[in-house]
Length: 256
Image (tube, rainbow, N blue to C red; front, side):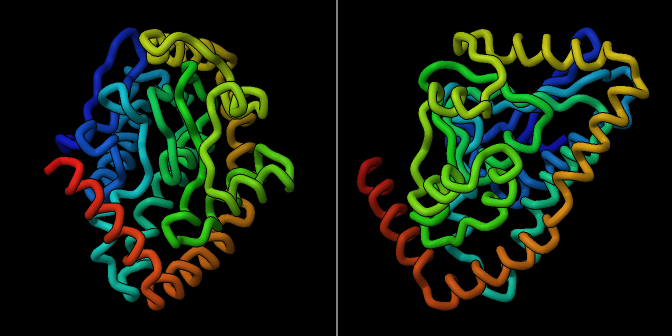
């Protein structure tokens, strides 16, 4: 297992943690591949009955795509690089075992989308979640696809066009958070939910998840293609790079 993820197993439930706390568990290509590989490994492990996805540290579950890596992305690389992240979403849906997201801090962009495709979400007061891509110069397209499975049209427009992050109470009111507990109980509650799902009659639960998988995947290929074209146009114009440069320079100045 890559050192950008960790896996612990206890009482039939595995906890797969994104392990880049110094970067708020932001998604690099290495991390994206490690998450997918971890899910495949755990789905094939007969000793594992359910999976919890969480992030290391207490700042963020996942702050989205790593801007330092994304800054150097070339237009011709976008389809393959973006595809590595979208492969995580597909793998969560393809995983036959319950996958519950324990949201310990911010879930933004790709991290928000990972949470949305999980079977349930556990969070704590004070966390925030949303789809801020437009503010980084990146079209919000695949994220919009996932949000439309959960939310009404006007709410999805608001979140996509403004890029704002919802506070936990608002996300809970929209049904995006299934369970709200104190921060130090998020993983334990997610384990409890995963174990409960795993205890259901096997065929009935599996076929129910399979149907949700079919519904979620319907239209994903089209959204992915539109997302690739949108990112290619944005990067060709240079808008994301300029915004990322400003962000990275501000972060460096703050550290200095």
